[in-house]
Amino acid sequence: MSHINIEIKAKTSRATEIRNILKQNKAKFIGLDHQIDTYFKVQNGRLKLREGNIENHLIYYERGNQKGPKQSKVSLFNTSSKSPLKDMLRKAIDILAVVDKKREIYFIDNVKFHIDKVKGLGNFIEIEAIDKTRKIGKKKLLEQCNYYIKLFGIKNADLLSNSYSDLLLRN
Image (cartoon, rainbow, N blue to C red; front, side):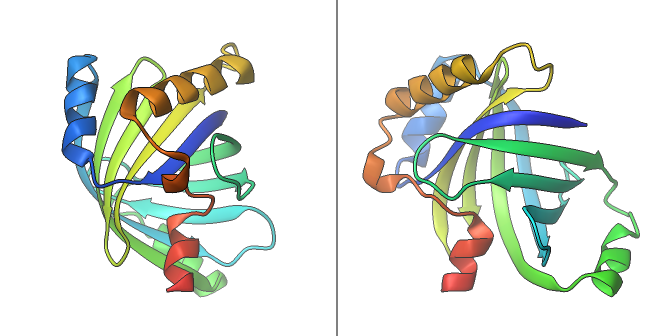
């Protein structure tokens, strides 16, 4: 399954405030997921295997490294927590980085929110306006993303351009 996202990632010290805003706006809490994302060295885009207690996917995505809302082209392949896929991938492709995080997952309509605590990096908020049907359009996704940036009071200085794997590799 492939889809388009407009998304942001930002450092935050205001997880409790953001959580309260999500609750006030009747966000659906999906749960707390302990996720291990294994990034593999690939020539184009990014390839990661997500292993969690809620989400388990092989994810390929293409996204530029820029601050603020950016488009991602995402392809997901559903896996299971007991899948032999990680072993197979490790035998065929070098590992680039491993990201260990605790992620709170929320939804409001087609917009997904993550409040993340990433081992070795700190606390983050992610907003993903998702168009799985290709009927919403980039303009509306961008409007949704910007709306929640303002609602949460996210400052430009807190916006990140890179993935967690990039940040870990820099440290």
